[in-house]
Figure 1: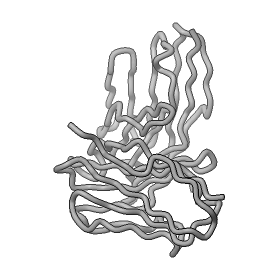
Figure 2: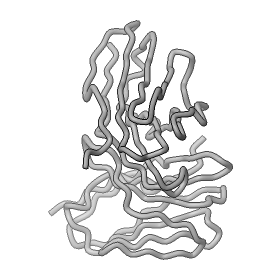
Figure 3: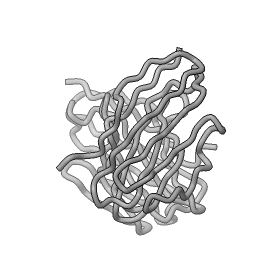
Length: 109
Length: 115
């Protein structure tokens, strides 16, 4: 059972475009994290959100935690080739920890 | 500062052989996680330790898999006997600021191929 559903699974865009990826669940999560993974490496933390409705910004990246704490989104403004990678969400619910399957983002120059 | 160190980086073995993967967490971190990553199933939590004690091993696929953490600076994941379906990248990660909200620091992974 995949408690964290990420969409889209794949996204291929041109440099300069904006994009949003999603992490959704039917369960309430006490906290949620976003990681980015590049080929041949382990995931690296981008942000942690813990409060429903919380919005955090990291340069061109904007993260939002849904009011009901069942969903989250990651918006990238003016994407760059360096943003290419696998974006993963991770959350805790019902006493257990889960990763989503990820969104593979490719940004072409 | 050294990050999480995993060895070996690559392992190719034949079905039925024993495989041992090793991990050195970041000094001072009290949580250690073992994950397996495949294209089909994504990142799966196998087991995690808190202060060297196994807390949740419900993700360990079957009795062929075992993990130990004899001290705060070392952990092993053993597969015996190995099967082709165990082929995956195995990651070790450590954290210090809580199980749920602490930042996971991942190693570079051990890519296992079982022929």
